[in-house]
Length: 450
Image 1 (cartoon, one colour):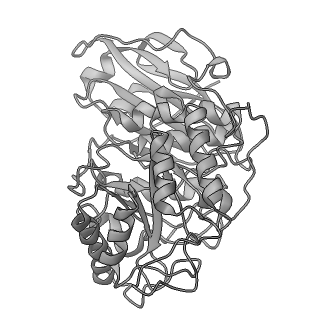
Image 2: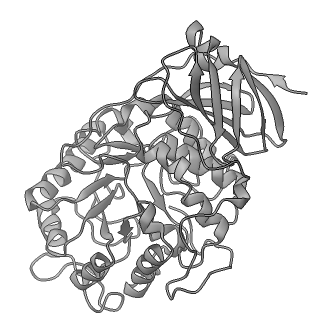
């Protein structure tokens, strides 16, 4: 028995143009050290992650940035010239050497600071020293800056935020080196309304944790910022502002928690799909030296990655009804459609989705016939008319690509791979640890998730 859903009309909006520095024309992809290692980092940690990204094949799917988070510098202060100093006990060869090693693998490297007097972990930060610090990072051949929002010296109004983050934008530009600028101000001061000309991405919410949908007082649904935010909490906050992102400047839903064992495989698929479809940066946070096949297959699903890196418009939410959400993406010519149905409830659901809900009263499209490919399983349903019957697992997602075969402008139908279940899909990479040996262990969180 299928329940019939009734959804509203799809708004077809793409977004805005972001920072004009030639970077992040597509959402950036990579890895950040914090979620697994927090302050327990050193050059071996970073190089091991870089080697794992290359050896596992993740590099071939677009994961290119290796970002060093907080705690990399000497905590006691700067040198006699006023420069930040990499902690020699953690990085004995220095940051330029480390950057060279990462670049030799075909990857790019990132660094961290805060638009404040101290970083979130209490290390020297960059407020008032933007040009000096940007010049130092450029001399180290850094490619990426994650710029946090701790210890802001009372400059927490919208104008204060704009001033602090613009200062670093200008300092990075002055170096002449292309450095992707990732602003991490947690959605404070409605950053999505002013971030596009300043940064290549901006955090639009509080910090994520490896929790799918459990409410937490530290991350109220009514406020953008917070900590310990669940996947669905962040998704719901992103829904009204998706149109604020675009090439060069993206809404950042925070680092992914794919690969953390607190989330089921269904939850991880839902999480990864929505981060991709909304075109958030896809920054991994798990221990890539110990990832499982399940983790790798999720992160390397080309159908889902295409929602992020391909020409599809940013996904918009059509409707929420109880535990069910319907989201859609359109092709640039508005001929094809990606339909995503999320089930945040505790039970699997059999659903009938009528075309009137998907195509919003467009009689021509409602009357058309479609071949529908489910993008996680590659199962194709031919000649679908009027409605589609689907099953969505608890905390899972159904993702259908609708390709018209009659009734509207005809396009060549590009079929997915032969019909098969997702658990039979072979990723185009090998799971390995930094030494190249296959890794079987589950990924565990070794630190709080930022």
